[in-house]
Image 1 (spheres, one colour):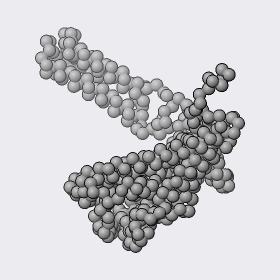
Image 2: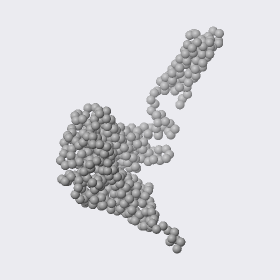
Image 3: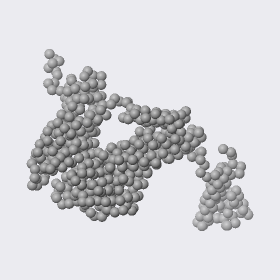
Amino acid sequence: MTQLTGRPILEAPGELARPVLSALLAGVRTALLGLSVVTVPVLGLWVVTPFADDGAAGALRLASALWLLGHGAPVLRGPAGVPLSVAPLGLGLLAVGQLYRTAGRVAARGAGRPGGRGAVPAVWAGYCAVACAVVAQCAGAGEFRARVVADLAVVALVAAAAVAAGARRPGAAPVGVEALERALAGLPAGVRPIGGAPVVRVAALAAGAGLLAAGGLAVAVAAVLTAVDGGAGSAVFEGGPAAVAGALLLTLVLLPNTVLWGTAYALGPGFTVGAGTVVSPVRTALGPVPEFPLFALLPEPGAGGWRLAVCVLPALAGVVPGLLLGRAAPAGGGRAAGPARLEAPWSAPATAVAALASGLLVGGAAAGLGWLAGGALGAGRMAGLGPVPWWTGPAAAGWVAVVSAPVAVLARSRALRAAAGGRGRPWRSGVPLVPGALAGTARRGALLLRARAYSVVTRLAGAPGASTAADVPTASGASTASDGLRAPGASVAADADAAAAAEAARAPGAPGAPAR
């Protein structure tokens, strides 16, 4: 009886006895959290907007449409059913990140418990249940309409991928490493980077991060130039505080799209803003574009000119993966804690093949992200916006492979020379930059010049008993004064000359210097 009365009537969702029900509620909670991130700002803007055309139902429909677009699910706009498929990747990253974390927590909590194996699919089921309600609310007649089957399929697919990635067991190999290792194992023995899948993946991630940084820098420079020119670029800012807030929020959720567009621009192929248009460093040809702050960052139509300098950024992004691969080549791709393993170092062709493999990975990712960042903003001419995947992908792969391959081979050669020179020698020891005799002469001359300068300054200061020009000490430190006495300044200078002579005698390449 005490045990029965001591238990609470209602328990927290994370402490329920049935893991499946707890995971189902976790999926529902994750979906509602992402939906609230969209709904609260939209309802707030509807409240502060004077003379709003729609009621609260229209604002909720707009929030539902934005939530679906964030998952990549296209919606229809207006009575004519104009397709709208530009996904705000900011909302998509938020949804995928929340699902990833929720699935990881549920998988860790359900490990080794009865019924724990079905907890992870329950997270997906709970998320999809909320998606069904959102699609049903947005399916009727209105300004934005959902396509029931297509939208549910897209949301379910995105949720399944995020949940599967988050539920991977701790310590498992990263996604794609095993497939990459099998692909590299099929190469001939002379050009096979043995055990190189992990480092190739890291190099590809580094190259991708560098390309994204290049795109972000291009967008930042465009924003600064637009602000300096004083062009507002949009009539949205004349619509009052509500219009400005809405434009800023939409700009924020579209910021990842903008960075990807900037990356495609830096790579060279650029992107399109409607049919028959192109925005690239080589040439810019535009037509009428909608009034939106991000479109104000587009360059002026015409030839590239100085804008071609932006193509240097992808070249810089290829240096880091080359260095990573070159440093891993002497160890055969391994990461031993002690000295580098030299039993099976990569050959120069194998190192170049690893760089090419990382370039192919970056190219595939660039093509996929370019496709996700674009879409349709209407019918007719505005049916295609964003990077063209079959141009952006090969350009990214080419930039990374062409730059990283020679850098990796050079870094490999330097690492092998440093390893062959001994553990305690610095990496420069195998390649003397200045001959020993020249280095010793330069050091001896610098020390003697310092001693002479100190002696001159002492005499000009008028020290008592300062020596005359005839009393200037020689390089051996002996004075020529007739009385055998030295002034204080001359004594210091002579000591400095003696130290300089001793240091010069020990310098490499000097006569009588000890052999090293």
